[in-house]
Amino acid sequence: MFTRRQFAQAGLAAASLATVRQSARAEEEKKMSFEITKTDAEWRASLTPEQYRVLRKHGTETAKTSPLDKNYEPGVYRCAACDLPLYSSETKYDSGTGWPSFWKPLDNAIGTSIDRSFFFGTRTEVHCRRCGGHLGHVFEDGPQPTGLRYCMNGVAMKFVPKASS
Image (cartoon, rainbow, N blue to C red; front, top):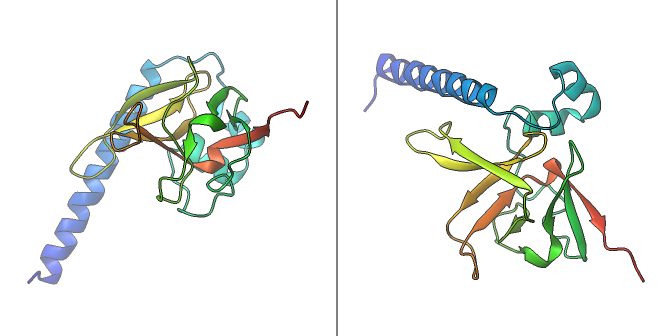
């Protein structure tokens, strides 16, 4: 059983680790360059508060809150920050996670980096290759033909329906 002191010490250690990992992430981002760059104030002005939190601060939207999760209309999913086409509806599937999931991005649409913010492990972060906006993560438990699950934050994307002929 934990004493209050041990519990407090564990909490402080976890908070310190999170701070160190966030600092490392910020340093890694400074080394990356993107076609579209804006100041923090410009990003805040062009995005909703939730989009800013997810795209610029690497947040995660609450599962099962995005209308894009259950959208299966034909079309393209684009970056909400810079409008770059990211995913085709042809590669979207229901992963059961509560976030829009795809088994393959469009060519030259995304970049990846190691996300060390997850306690006691790493994940592969997915970001827009043009503006660097955080989109979500990719996991190796998806369907064939790739075996990958690109688990995206719906708020980080916008859906553009295929034009009717």
